[in-house]
Length: 323
Length: 271
Image 1 (cartoon, chains in turn purple, red):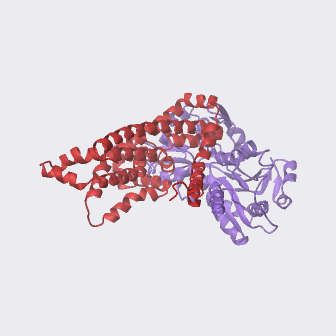
Image 2 (tube, one colour; image 1 turned 90 degrees about the vertical axis):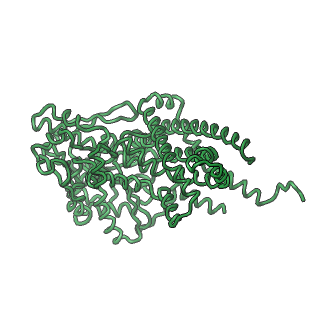
Image 3 (tube, chains in turn cyan, blue; image 1 turned 90 degrees about the horizontal axis):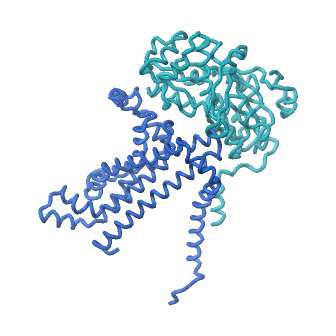
């Protein structure tokens, strides 16, 4: 009976994971990733598991900031963390929980809508901000405090004010967005669009493509998708909550760059390395990302030669040093 | 016959199991309650967002219980007193909300209330919005909590002898009058217990609510938001406050029902 009880307690606390890992990758591989990576990672899981049938890939998706916190604060066991903003890994996980950070893909912001959205037949690159300000139009974005897509949406609005030379644009548009239109993560907004609770929502291009949504593509100057415009992106600044309630930090605009790392105390490092190798292969994971609207870096990038040296040897051939 | 058998293995088995159960429930809760310092607790309760969310939780759960009471009482009476074809089926429908995973409840309600569904379209036209509103929160809470009320009160009605109602009817009271003057007072204790169960269920709901309404935040959603945005340290004090407030509320309700219960027990039937 006692043994049965122990098993129940073990399962209940979720601390049950393989204790040893041999050279041939096998067992559970736990990946935490940004919500916006769900579809490509599901595809990668499918292919990866046929290549390594002994590995059981377990994915958990969520706002990147939250997922990183699950690791750093709750000590939730994970092998790999992939963030929609590579800076989250730098800020939350390095140096305690991880040592390096590979940038592997990019994305950009688009304004999504459906056939039934109000003014769907007239919205375009030049009038979207005016439509978002119209009475009766319901639009939303994800929570800037929890999801990089959230603060990035606000940055796009700020940049739009400068780009279209309309100083009051941000305030006008935001006045038409009650707090209830803010949701924890951006992918949730897709179902609100599809059920007709919302007319417009800010999403990553990849999410729009993967969910078959209509979208307004924005000029490179404001879509946060092209790092050649990082100097202009820098002019956008959004205050998000800091380390405790009532404190704030400022996020500065920069291009959307995905980062991935393996955690220091990964329960299954062998399988994790195998997966990272597959992800960074231009014919493997990077191709999937490309097909799904998340243009990858080929090859992937690390900022310093020092960091490259810290990578597991098998992974070093897949990266270049480029800041 | 020996009245005292201290080494009876079965007795000890029950004690051991009992302690395991109690420890299993209390250990995590005590651990959490003991974490925040008094300063943390003070800061938390001084935060208007925290007070607002706890109040919203109590208020929406209370509303859900009130709605359950209003529409659930006559329904529970019907189930307790009448047999009709398909009754078993209806009873299992009542239990459905207990079994369905909570996020699915939220998704289902959102899907129905969206502009793309005819019902949602109608609701939007008359100005009823479910996404991100108190209406939405109460709808979801009622959905998940109603079974607890109906089942409890149904059992209460079943425990009341039908002959008391027959006596009332034979003395000339109408069915409605009999219900109000005889059955209702006798079942009042089970109704209060039902309301407590219903409230308790509603106040603990998270999964369905967070899908329908992230803002305005009920306490469980705020705790989740605090956890994701600031970490454990700032979510625990809010959780402690919610537990304390609930404990006091339910204790009060228990005391009230206890008194009423003992009165009826003393006056009507010895139990």
